[in-house]
Every structure is written in C-alpha cells, then in structure tokens.
Image 1: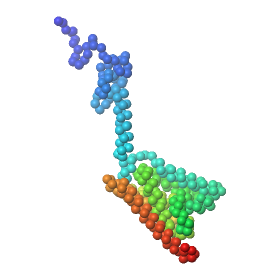
Image 2: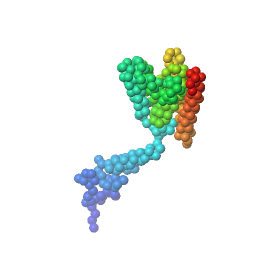
Image 3: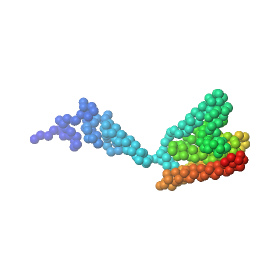
Image 4: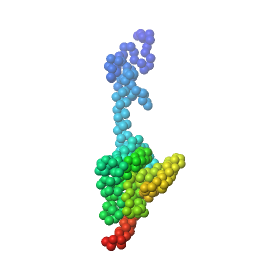
Length: 315
C-alpha cells in the first residue's frame, strides 16, 4: 500500500472530500457551522456570539426572544423602577396633557369674553367655575373646588403657571409615573382650594393652577432630599415664590401654602414608603390627605352655613 506524500492534518478534510455549501450561499463551500442550529455558513453569514459563532437567522431569532421576554418581564411588574416605584420612562405625557386642558379652558373663556385675553374673567364659564366660598355654601357648588384649578386671570397668569408646570412636571412625572404624578397634582390642587375655602375671604373669587403647582414645588424639594442632591436651588425657588405671593397684591397666599404643604406630605409617602408595601403606603397617604381635606371643607361649610343663617335669617 502506498500513502499520499502529504496526508491531510487531523480535523481537516482531504482534497477528495467536498465541503458543504453555505446555507444562504450554496455556491460557497465552507467548513464553518452555526453553534446553535449546526447549519453550514460562510464567514459573511456568521456573527460572533458569547460562545462560538451563530448564523444571522439564529441571531435574529435570539433577539426576538429577548425582546419578548423583556416585554413579559415589564408587564409582570418587574424591571427598572424609580425610588417612587414607577417604571423608568423618558417621556412625559400627563404634563403636556394638563397644559393643553388649561390652555383650552383659557381659550374658551377668552372667546366667551368677546376675545379679550386680559379680561377673560368676564366669561360665563369663569363665573360658574371660580372658587367662590359663598357660592359653594349657598348653592352646594362643590365643583368649584376643582374647576377653579383650570381657570386663570389673563394671559400673564396662565403663561407663568403653564411654564412652571412644564418645568416642574416633566421631571416629577418621570420620577413618579403617570398615576402617582396625577395623585400628587390633584391632591395638591385640593389642598390649595381647601386652604382658600377654610381660611380665606368668603366673598372673593379665586382661580388658577397655582395650588397644584406649589404642590409640585414641595414635591420637588422632597425628591431632592430623598435623592441626596443639593436642595439649595429648590429651597430658594420656593422661598422666592412665597415672597412674591406676599408682596404682590391679588395673589392667593393661602392657596399657594396649602398646595405646597399637601404636595410635600404626599411626596414623602411617594419616595420614602418601604419597598415591600410601597403602593399600600402611597395609596393610604393620598386617601388620608384627601379625607382630612374633605373633613376641613365640611367643617368650614357648617361654619359658613351657620353664619349665613344668622345673617339672613334663612336656614
């Protein structure tokens, strides 16, 4: 027997053995295979994996499986979350929606007021929705506590409030998530309205989103403290705004302070609640704050009702 002068090395095919063609390019012979499906593949059709090389089809299938698992993981309530328990998101949705509602209501009042943007408080919608304690007590018009938070006196008033809402709301909505952000916003609005109703002038109309916005200011301060950031700028903004509320006539200091305090209390529960029972603590705090504010409103309503009865001899 005779042997070839140059026998093939171990693991390499001899010249007489035909290499298989690439699965995607049959005219290309290759000795490589995908470690996942074991199909022959040329170098152009292989991608480096954690172990060996995979073909383009297997790489795509693996990516699809990973995306499907990630989606199931998020829907199950897992995944990256903020200190408030919200899923991490980079896009604010509720904040621009609130701004749009406020602007729409303002436009309607301007149209009803004959197109005057500075005297839109002459509109019927404005008169029916402004926070007027006597109207609430005498006519049981409790909706004024909510509707007054979407009404504004003139173009400058709404421009300043919406700018503040945009600046504060974007970051807070990302931190809290949509539902928690709305909870803090509306309980702060109710806190500002309750402070005006309980301690303010009974025959003076009050309107504006300032109570809710000051609540967001208080929430920002609590968030800064929780994240251990420098609170100097947040405190400075709050102090400046309170000083302006005191010095500028016609601004409701009670509404601002009421919203600020309630917003800060609500935010404490949002970012300091224990992780295992976070949702229960957060929901419970919002319910307790709302119940306390409703209790204050009912108590003040009984006081004003008694005063009206004594004044007009009608009960």
